[in-house]
Amino acid sequence: MHNFLKTIGFSKIQTDMQLEPLLERAVNEKYRTLIINGNEGSVIEQYQLPVAPSMGIAVVGERTPDGVFHRNYYFPYMRSYDGTLTEAGSVERHLEKETYAGVLEDFKSGITLIFYITNSVQLRELQKMDMRVKARQAFLTGLASEGKILLPIEKKEDPEAVKRQSNERRRLFEAARQGDQEAIDTLTETDINMFNELHQRIVTEDLYSIVETTFMPTGVECDIYSILGEIVSLRVKENVYTHENVVDMKISCNDCIFHVAINESDLVGIPAVGRRFKGKIWMQGNLEFIDDETDCQADDDNADAVG
Image (tube, rainbow, N blue to C red; front, side, top):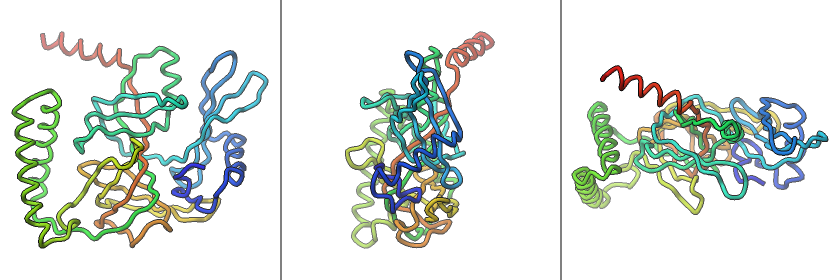
């Protein structure tokens, strides 16, 4: 059983036998089919079973030449249409099966973001065609196993000043990655000053009245994160099979925008725009690829034009 099936409204399913009819239905209905050639005459197939708008269960398997489908794996998914542009996105294959993790080196939070790629079959097809591709943007979503709603904090700083500080910090992070010692020293000094300020304020204030948003890895899995972010918009969706409600929240967290889904029964508090969500999420995403050779040729043409 996948740990995050309950997130999309299957909290009462406790065994693989209970889930089996849904997985069979996904294959038989052939919704959003993706098929690529495999080895020795077989084909790799991916099907999706929608259970609510923009979310469902994906099933991936191999169909042998005699027409028999063998399921390899499945996973719950949620789609997003809010993309995060990247110039330093890459992929790494998992050891157990031919699925992939996406890696964003230029994630706005200042960390290297690792997430589960939901369009691994498409990536396998591109690799099979020997195409040189690179990631252009990632459509990130998070499935939450639990969470709570926190009240917003009073924002005393000018939004434009906060934006400028954030852009400057990202610039420093990028320079530090390139080995710029001055940027490293500046970031170190900033962190020391911030620590001293927090040490003084924590004596008289609550932690979550000081910290507005957070984004950090948690646990042993590399794509599990603990987040605290502001709710930008939200929508309650109903699972058509179980009639359980799923809350889909667009979250602003450390200058990043992504969607988070959680089963309404696992959410403590009443969500509302402007309030904050705190919880643990499994980060997944759909990577959009572009032809690296075309992009490189465009860069060469631009360089020639400048020259």
